[in-house]
Length: 294
Image: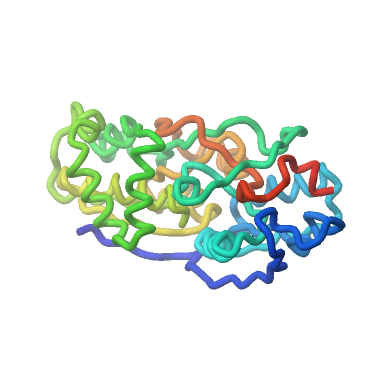
């Protein structure tokens, strides 16, 4: 199996106090506001993520001066969600799909009438300059990589239920030969060419990067997977210390990095369309819009 290096952004435990509320609407009193019920805290992920920047902007745009955005990691966020959901307690968090939590829990995005979180996003594959010339077969596979939210969901759920990422990826590759054939059409096998993929520690990107790692390995590449935060991921592509990443969310989530490194990387394909980010709550909460947080 390919070499995997875990870098910046290791999972840390996050403990968030939530107000116990006593009924299925997560409200202990008719006079208690949504803010009171969650102590005016929004559970977030790593501070380098675009969704965090967008949420900070949302707090300003909607004049939510009393609210605090709590940083952590995606794993800590989902742990806080599970804790709240199991007790039917209120929680407001930064959500995105594709993600296994939307399959496991009944969730909803809060309406965003000001459009702070933008329209639907896309997941792009980006590569260092010169990859096409140095590794044309790897470049071709990466540029032809496209799959659906359901495809990704199978891998994410397997991992969430206890499978190692590389095992879940290998299972998906074995079970989906037609899809893999589409990605590898016109690609020749190689003997030991080294390829380094970098990605952020989101469940979606763990799934896609491990699947691509397995596909490239089966083609004869020696693959290294490096997990970092968003800034170092884009930096590695721009300075050539990594070959490619399947984890660029555009046009909003990674807008800052795309603009910062404009001209220093190549956007070689869109692997998924219609992805979404925004403030998210369990459906049992009696709230529908970010405006309601006032």
